Amino acid sequence: MPRSRSFLFVLLALGGLGAGCYPTPNHMPVILKGPRPLGSPSTPGGLKFEEGTEIQLQLEVKDQDNDEVFFRWSQVPAEPAGAFSSTTVATPTWTVPSPPEDPNTPIYLYVEVEDGNDGILIGQSPAIFVIPK
Image 1: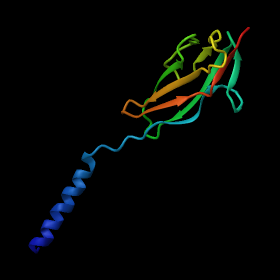
Image 2: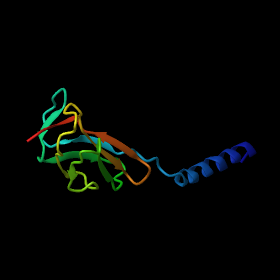
Image 3: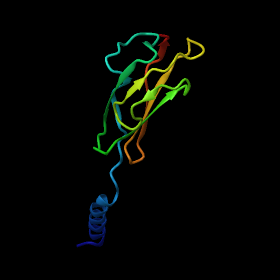
Image 4: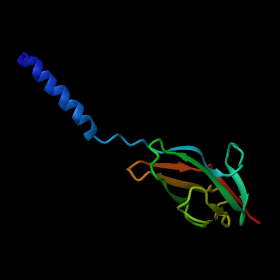
């Protein structure tokens, strides 16, 4: 075999062996639905709920790599604080807090979705306004 052809063969063989040495790229998780109160309509200007109402939250996530997915829910502003049934599950309930000092201040619920392979995504609910009892 001529020298140039054997060199090419060695390069191709090494390239074929090396292909399995590199990890496949991680795909970010994708939010398909939510985060939002389950059954809430898409209305401009936000959603209104009476204080003390327990709301089931909706979140549907897909991870193309089938990685285990982790969740962290939070509320902004943090006060007055609503209550999550759990901050680490996909679909917790959230109890609406008392109204903020300024009734025009919206509350947003955030969920951080992580796939354990450095894929992190943050979802935000629509604006939520609290109606006093």
